[in-house]
Length: 312
Ligand code: FAQ
Image 1 (cartoon, rainbow, N blue to C red):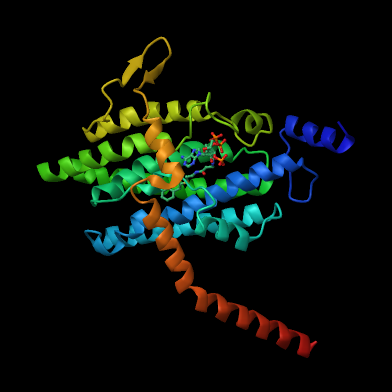
Image 2: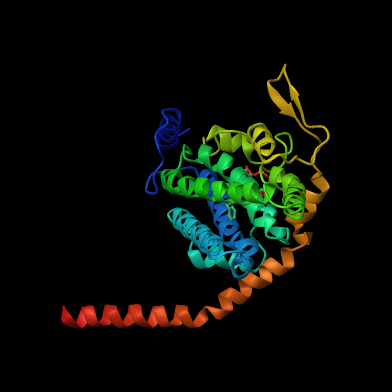
């Protein structure tokens, strides 16, 4: 091991952040680019299921809240693309990987949002799972990623509460509204558990990512924390989680839960989920429709820089 690597390892051991200009092993850099860019793509594709409901929100108040939330997710994607760029990958390359289907994004965004209650379930469960994962990433070893996470987590916790508030309102409403809330929870529960990734035994990156302190908890640890947090919350709603095996285990001091359908998960990440094709088509259309904006911005930047040069 050479001196640079020893110094890198000593910083990781001392909980010091690795910064963009610091030496880092090539595999550490590549692993971070992979994870951060997938995370950024998830935020961007994640705007689609809720974006689809902005025009159909049941009141002006709900519409303005949802609009702000979806806009926040877009902002999160942009911070994360910036964090990945500090590692030497270009924004164009990352976007191209997303649009051509080469890059992954979270499995959860390949499910359809079919009723207004889905806005509640996405906020409560999907943002809830995202926060559970992102809180540990505030302590990740790469400085630009950790700092982006601090702000993102603050915004995500507002998102989670707005989702819970939608479900709380529906749960106190008419019988049809209660049923709609329950149906949304039934459909989003298992896909939310899949967001944490494969079981620890199947996870390809966890061991190395834990050793480098990129990840600070394993997929299964975070999934368990999420289950434990969700049970009392669903009880307050007077609704239930769709798992007959869910049961408090006094020895483990955790809830036991049923088997996740890993075939469904694998199928989705291979591109065969209910909305994979639609999501990529929507992102490609948005990119094509935005071509004139990029051209105008480039022309404006060129004009500004040539004016600045002629003044100097
Ligand atoms: N979906 O070895 P591991 C959000 C892939 S943000 C698709 O365990 P790792 C905000 C994985 O990439 C949600 N693919 O991987 C929001 C790898 O494939 P690769 C996103 C998945 O990286 C809310 C392979 O399986 N959050 O929701 C998934 O150590 C509401 C083996 O897996 C983040 O990205 C999956 N669920 O652990 C927006 C957080 N799980 O790359 C709008 C940052 C695994 O070798 C509305 N990321 N894979 O081809 C992480 O913490 C980690 O990357 C994990 C996966 C925990 C997701």
